[in-house]
Structure formats: C-alpha cells, structure tokens
Amino acid sequence: MAPSTASPGNPKMPDLMFSSAAILGTGSFGTALAHLIGQKLHEVVLVGRDAAVVEAINQTHHNPRYLAGASLPPSVVATTELQDAVRHPLIVFGVPTSATRQVAHSLAQHGLPETTVLLSCAKGIERGTGDRMSVILREECPANPIAVLSGPNHAEEISQDLATCAVIGCRDEQLATLLQQLFTAPHFRSYTSDDLAGIELGGAIKNVYAIAAGITLGLGLGDNAIAALVTRALAEMTRLGTHLGGRIETFAGLSGVGDLIATCFSEHSRNHRVGKALGEGQSLDDAVNSLGMVAEGVPNTLSIYEAARTAGVRTPIIDAVHAILYKDMPAAKALSELLNRDPRPETD
Ligand SMILES: NC(=O)C1=CN([C@@H]2O[C@H](COP(=O)(O)OP(=O)(O)OC[C@H]3O[C@@H](n4cnc5c(N)ncnc54)[C@H](O)[C@@H]3O)[C@@H](O)[C@H]2O)C=CC1
Ligand SMILES: O=C(CO)COP(=O)(O)O
Image (cartoon, rainbow, N blue to C red; front, side):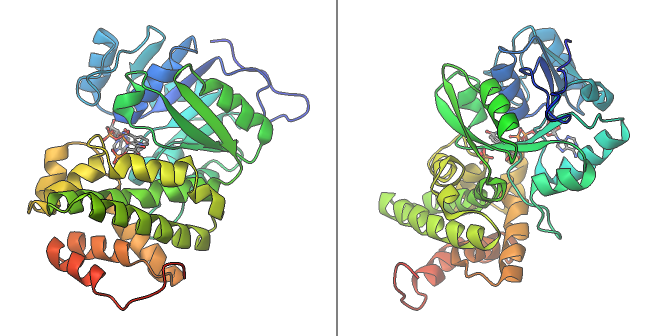
C-alpha cells in the first residue's frame, strides 16, 4: 500500500487520493462498496466476523451469503482481523448501527492512527442515547476525521453497476471532495454536504417508513395509499429530523426523500420486506428470521420512537409502526387509527 501523506496545511488530512481502504462488515453493503471502490483502489480489505464468508470471498471473489450477484475485483481481500484495518488511510463502517460503537471502540484499541478517515454508512441511531453514528465515532475515536455517506443505494443495484447517486457529509470541505472523488464512477455520482445530522437522520428515519410501506402493500392497499403514506412520511421525517438538528433542505435531498422513495417502493429493501410480511399476518420474529439480514428499521423503530417522545415531536406514522411491532397492535387497526385521527391542515 502507498500510504497517503499528510497535508502541510492540515496535518489530519491526507492530501492525495486514497490509495487503499478497509471496509468493516462483509454484509450486503460492505460487499457492494468493495465492488464499487475496489475498481478504483489497488487494495480494499473487507473485514468480517464470519470466517466462512471471509473464506468464500477470498476463494471465489463473490459473497454468496449476502450479495450473490456481486463480483469483487482482484484488489479486494477479506479478513477476520480488525487489526488489518488500521493500516489503511480510510475505514468505511458497513456494520449495523447496533455494532458501530463496539467496533469503533475496538478499532481505537488497535492503535488507530489519528489521520485515518472514518466514513459511516450505517442507517440508524443508537438506542438509549439517540446518538447518530458520526457522534458515536467522534466519542470513540475523538481525533479522527469523520464523514458519512447515504442516499438511495440498494446494495443489489450498486453491485450490478446500475446508476445511482449518494451524498457525502463532512464538515471538512477538502476531505469531502476527496471522498467525492473516490465515490465517483461512471454509474455512481456523489454530492457533498456539511449537514451530517440531516443526512444521518434521513437515512435512519426512512427505514421505519419502509416498514410502513411494506405493511401497506401486505394489507393489500393500493397505489393511492402508498403515495399518501410516503408523502405524509416525508412531512413527518422533516418535522422530526429538523427538530433533532438536520437542515430542512437535506430532507428534500438524496438521503431524505431519495432514500425514502428507494426503500418504500423497492422489493430490494429488507425493511420493506419485513413490513410486507407483517401486513400479510406474519409475526415480527418470523419476518426478521426469514430475512437473515439486517433490517435496521426494526430496532430503529424503538430508538427513533423514543427520540421523538423525548423531543416531544408529533410522529403518528412512527407511533403506528411502533404499536404494530412492539405492542402487538394488528396492522389493520393501526391503519384505521391513523386515518381516523382528528382532522388537521396539511402543512402545520
Ligand atoms: N444493504 C443495503 O442496500 C444498504 C445498507 N446500508 C446500511 O449498512 C448497514 C449494514 O447493512 P447491510 O450490509 O445491508 O447488512 P447485512 O445484514 O447484509 O450485513 C451485516 C454485516 O454486519 C456484520 N455484523 C453484524 N453484527 C455485527 C457485530 N456486532 N460486529 C461486527 N459485525 C457485525 C454481519 O456479520 C454482516 O457481515 C446498515 O446500517 C444498513 O442500513 C446502507 C445503504 C444500503
Ligand atoms: O438503505 C437502503 C438503500 O438505500 C437499503 O434499505 P434496506 O436496509 O431496507 O434494505
């Protein structure tokens, strides 16, 4: 690996294009990102905890367990050793939100250099603290430059080189531009922003609405119902997200309405699939177990519901999903209660 050098202007900033990277998490998104940036870097190390998945990646350059359609370039190697990540100038977090704090803590204990850039891609907030992932990374690795990436980015489509866009959130403009260069490909366009809160909150909150959209489908409702749901979900996401620190325009962007549309209308979305199973009458346990992958909206319905209650923000759709998932309310009853609330103006 040719390490990046530090900029004389900013000792924390690599002034060259990244030469290599580590991606934490050998799941769907980690694999899709390895496919994407593995074509641009001469070394990408995928770090996973499952030895069988790691071995399959190294032997076949595919990940049949999580993303069967993805082919991985020769630059991508997998390992179970977290220690291997710390020699790379960029570490991408592709583990679920529930694992981010513990993984970041372990990294810090493995001698993480202060110049290493940490890029969070997980979509959720921490239960109990309500912390966004970039806040957790700041707490666990206080000296490191931190950025986030989000948008309508189904792993299945990225790994097939199907076109999409993402937004990279970073307060350091120079670093944002470096990351934008790395996450640019003929089929992948990146934008930059300094609104980390807005980007992360949009990505987290939309997962709850993707479950709601799946429930709507599972209940056999039509296109009008899903369109109405997504529209009111955007209003609710914006109300809650701005209250929690995001900027209003960010919720109208890729990580807000963009990802909301992608997950509410796509069968690729695991959250959507869980919702559909619930709408069809399956139990939450059965729906999650048959998925075999992370559906962030399931734990995040709890963490986001709690954050909304603490903030005192009105969130009827999140409350309805919370009641279906965690209070055994039948989906049809939750829908009826949502529709029969007191009338109100559209824009208050
Ligand atoms: N799959 C997708 O299309 C996208 C996913 N994301 C986000 O990326 C994050 C990861 O999701 P996916 O890759 O889709 O999930 P996944 O279920 O496909 O894979 C999760 C990976 O994380 C690992 N993992 C789970 N718990 C762990 C722990 N405690 N410590 C270390 N590793 C652990 C698993 O072994 C697995 O390799 C989520 O926050 C998700 O919202 C973001 C954009 C798109
Ligand atoms: O966030 C995603 C696409 O942008 C993936 O959504 P799911 O986690 O619901 O599959």
